[in-house]
Length: 304
Image 1 (cartoon, rainbow, N blue to C red):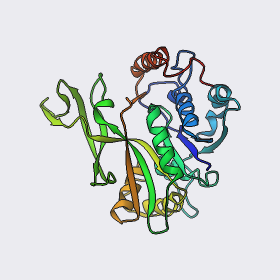
Image 2 (tube, rainbow, N blue to C red):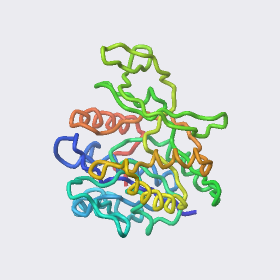
Image 3 (cartoon, rainbow, N blue to C red):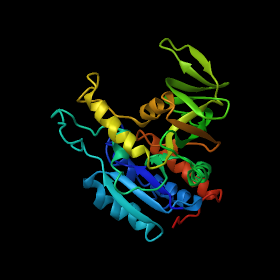
Image 4 (tube, rainbow, N blue to C red):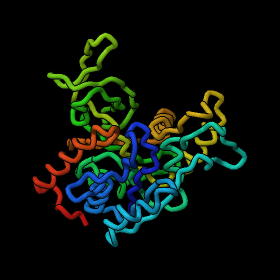
């Protein structure tokens, strides 16, 4: 069965402080994080890659990631743009960024017709989750009444930073390991005992470091596109939506489907350690981590 890896790489990287973080050379031979994700996806059985990006970045993609991947896998581009809204809708002239992850995935509607995995371009997820999600997708049984989706459930303690607090979507599961909801939790810090939430005055409230968290790694079947298309219009019609800064987000869409009984989302645990690039200060940490994985034989020096 055909399966596709969709990489969200259209972000503006406003907190990165210059440069294009999706294309930052971080591996021992200048590889991007995306190249490691593509390598892991191919090993897991995915056979197509779709990049969600911006038109002005295509030349840089061609000179970097596409050149590195070569003929290893079929690749396609789709573009997430501010102006890409349904017919009859307008865009506030003050808006500076696209409309969030829901709009990004909707941009794939005309090129993805098979089960697919969605990831962020600037996050390293490890090998395990690619395999477990692929295995779920090839056996997914979505129906018009209930969609069969999945997500990678990372262990909270494997996603914390040594450099400060993080925000994580802490998952609530039912007895069958299906997602019930995601609690967006801010100011989570690493502690001697595991993890805690740091209050305004510095006090720490304990949180289970073994909790499952979402790192924006979702497995979908193509039925999601009709949901996103309808939902995007409802989002734009909502009087509470901020026309300048509002974002149409995948976790919100999934949460609504679960609450309406229209989707089951299996949480597939992965014990791999996540790391990613948000700030310039993260670059050296990620470079050292990737070098360590190569030195340990987890990856070859040349990925393709």
